[in-house]
Structure formats: structure tokens, C-alpha cells
Image (cartoon, each protein chain N blue to C red):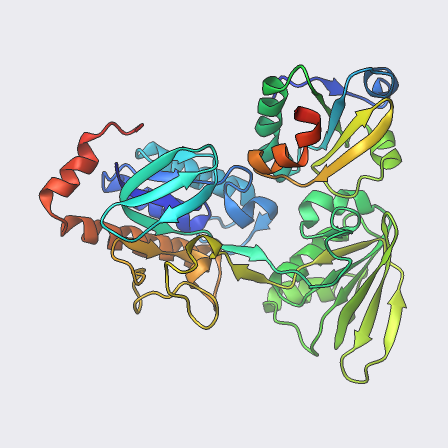
Length: 321
Length: 108
């Protein structure tokens, strides 16, 4: 049995792991099989993470965090959690490979999942011109005309990045102003390959085996026009990833996991949550990292108050069990 | 990065299309994080089902002709070939159980 199992390997999960490991709690990090490192693994330059005046590549930042956690004794498993039993003193975590791990505390830091437009053709055309990952797929749109949906930082980053390949990038946003930070907006606005379309929403995706165009509707007068594009990149935000804890943990009206005040304590004793999965507002790498710190400290305090014999059971079993 | 055999634009005909085996081609690139993440899972599937399916890799940076011919717009893209024809396409990095479910008909 473990003292701490951390589920998730973004900035929240790995920062919790660094703190828990330095507190000698030998955390087990369930990092995911194909999404280890989280959302930053699909970004390029991260310019707003403090301590890197020249910026740092997202994947490099996450590999650094993993190494930092491992250096202090965190163990990272590249697998996915398939089920969780969080009630009771001893928590059970079941993985995709069938392994069951027990722990006295669980830190849940699963982040969020890309939001979809909800259009009929979206799933079928995914991978055939519809994409959620500019860094993965931009390469295939060399000298093409493409569209990016969204008005936040990630939409601006994707649009700007995609101009490395595409001849023309249309940014389609449903309201009349962008949510993105000033620096990201200005960079996109200054790019001659980017054209903005405000008060427009994507209503159709056209194409047989590959995307050939989209239908966009004006949100003010309702008129629909067709835009010929060979790619559609969707960057309309993300939803907290809570499906593993439905019916076990209380959620907020935003769909995030409910925590007690500024702490990471959920409604279940010994279960803590951190990062984007509890944050409907800020969702930055650095706020997630801070939130991971809070969770590790809360877990440490909780463990300190547990009966001695329970803690000894966690410590006595070999770490690999 | 892995022991999996690489195929190229030049070797594609002989290695994939003319082969009598069931062959899955993993279209990938160095700069694609999800490709790197799924690579060890493909290695595992290949070694566990060696008698059923062969898995090879094609680097889309170095081999643009095949990437274009098979209309790759998103990677990782995994295409199963039998008798020179694509019989299945799986797009995106997925956990091992999900990939095995997608490929079930070729692994049984």
C-alpha cells in the first residue's frame, strides 16, 4: 500500500509528486499511457512559466518536471486509471493493465479534455482535416487554407503556429472580441496570413474523405456562408476530466471537482484534487503547479493525523507492490 | 526509439504493398508528441502478436510521397494493409486496450 497515489502528470500532478516525494511519501504517479505530461506536451514555446526568461518548449518543461519528481523518489507509471474506489480509509486504483494499487491518499489531477463543437461530421472527419492539435497536424497543411475556431490563448497560439505551414489561416470566433491575452492577440493580429471572422459560428463541416470546406453562420443576422478550407483546427476550450469520479466526488456547477475553500480537500477524506480539474477560471500551467503543491501539503497533513498502525502498513509494504 | 522496422517511399511497394503478411504502417514524425507516446505500445502489440500482424514505421518528414498518397492529415495514423489495400485506419494515440480493440479483427 502507498501513502500517496497521484493521478495525472501535468504541472499539477508532477508538482504534487515533487512535494510528496520530498516529504518522503514515495508517491506513485499514474501518468497515462499516451497522454503523459498532459496538455503541455502538445504545445511549443511556453513563455509565461516563471524561471525561463527565454521561454521553454512545453514537452521539455514537462520532462523536466517528471525528472525532478523522480529524483526525489516518485515512481511514474505509464498507464491509465480505469476505475477508482475512493470511499473508506484505503483507496483502490485499478489500471488498464489490471494492476490494483492501494493508498491512504489520492491526489486527483486529471486536467481537462478538449471541447468539441458538437457537429455531426466532427467525429467522422477527425484526422481527415479536423484536428485538435496544431503541433501534430499543422505540417500536413503546407500552402493550404485552413480555419481555427476559438478566441482564447490556445486558438491564437494555434493560428500563429499554423502560419508556418498554411498560406492562409481564418480565425472564427463566435463573439465580437477575443478572450486571449493581449500579447497573443497582438501577435496574431500582426500576422498577415491570419484573417479574423467575428460573430461567426461553425455550423457544418463539408467533405467526403477529406475536409473541403465549412459552413459558418453569422450569429447576428443568421446568414450562412461557405468557406473553402482543407483543415479545421478546434480550440474552443476544455472541460474538466471527471468521468472517473462521477458519483464519488462532489462537482461544482462548472463541472469541476468541488474543494473546500482554498484547499484541495474534496468531499471524501484522504482524496485531494488539483489543477485544471478544480479550476474553472485560471487554468495556467503555473496555477496548476501551485495547486499541486497545495494538494501535496494537504495530503501530508492528512497522513500526519492518521493512526500510526495504518501509516505503518503503508510504509512496510515494498514500494513495488 | 524502437526496434520496429522503418519503411520508405522507395521500399513501400516491396515492404508493404507486395507483402503477403498483414502489415500495419505507423505514419509518424519526430516532432509529434503523441507519436512518441504511442510508439512503445505499438512495439508491445507487434511483439505480442508477431504471428498475426507486422508493424512498420514510416517517417512522414522523410517520405512525403506515401504520406500524400494515403492522404495523411493527422498523426499518428496507423493503416493496416492486406494484399496492397488499406483495410483499416486508426488515427491518434490511444491506450493499449483501445488500440487492441480497434485492431481486434487482425489480432485474433
